[in-house]
Image 1 (cartoon, rainbow, N blue to C red):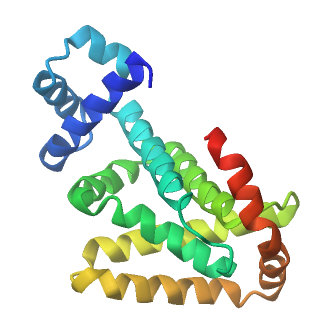
Image 2: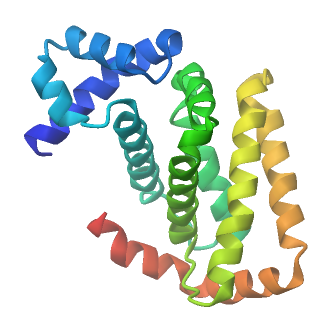
Length: 210
């Protein structure tokens, strides 16, 4: 990890406590930098666009952490739907202690000016999930599957944020239902089954590059 990455990591770690009260804002960023004894110049270098860069870095870090944990799992015998469900569960479980920060994040991303950022972050996350699941499509199915999974992923996050059930059991049941609904589309089901056999080897061969 480079020095600049270390600085961003430290600031993000401190900022997660402040965004709960101040939102994903310059106020939260400055408070985080003060907590970490990082001067304003270093803060500006780490996050030139302020909260926008902080949001991007948080999402990017969460994607990497998700793939890192998933890389230690034995998924050889798992069908595609379970790989996808496992990835989404991992992503959410890793951020269980940051639920309120994520709630504030959704409010930030819901602003009209952040539409493209929201779409970009969602696409990157679902693309990472399909990567883990073993997707190697290059045709129209590539975009179809990511679009459908984006709907599953975002709706599951919203459900999860409001879920009060023990160990989020209601959320996981909701997730399973949503995935089942997507798999009812015949053409996609056929594609998923076709790609399942090569998924594990591809993921293990390339995950070290992440």
